Amino acid sequence: MTEVWVYLSTSPLLWLALTLVCYGLAMRFYGWTGSRAYANPVATAVALLVLILSWTGTSYDSYFQGAQFVHFLLGPATVALAIPLAEQWSRLKRMVFPLILSLLVGTLVASLSALLIAHTLGASTATLASLAPKSVTTPIAMGISEKLGGLPSLTAVLVLLTGMVGAIFGPALFKRLSVRDDAIKGVALGVAAHGIGTARAFQLSDAAGAFAGLAMGLTAMLSALLLPFLAPWVLQHLAR
Image (cartoon, rainbow, N blue to C red; front, top):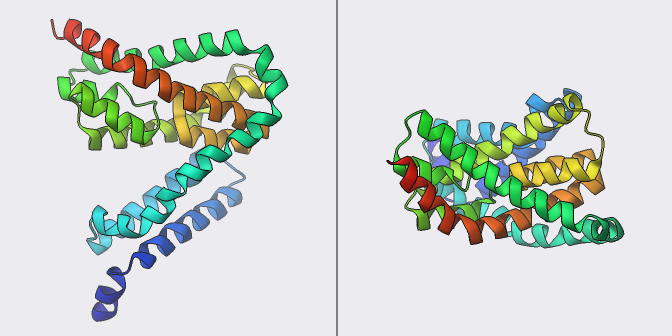
């Protein structure tokens, strides 16, 4: 069995297959629980994969040789978000001003609140810089983090955790606050929880998913434009 495992572990297709199997099992578990928030399929699949990689002693680089095929599909999947958004075009035109205002405020609050809380808890400057783009989709967040002097690998973990927390607790918070408009739900999830939140929004409705996809993309763009200038000023004042 050891020789068989050594042979299989060198094949990228093994890790691609395990990724798909883990997500399939996570979706079944999510359905079995009645779509409970705590059973978020992304979080469950990640936990399963982490256990497998830890148990087998497999490095992330070896795993990513197979997972890169799924990673490649993120590009086409993101572009495909334009399809449901086009179906909401008439409503989108009526919401341009409140949408832009909410995205601007949401982007700033998501970053600045995290910096202030982490600074109060005694986080280092590198950790603060890594935390600033936590609500931005991973590739852009890692680039922003590196420019700010943060740790891109830590940023990737923080982005993942942010997305899972938003996807798990977001719908319950909407219910608690009596938020019924799918567009508002989608924008909130897209701004706060990027891609994972967008996936959760599509589980709520196509309209929520469309607005989440738009909010995710525009939040990434605003963050890339604003944070490299704003975050160093904030970090400088926090260091005093």
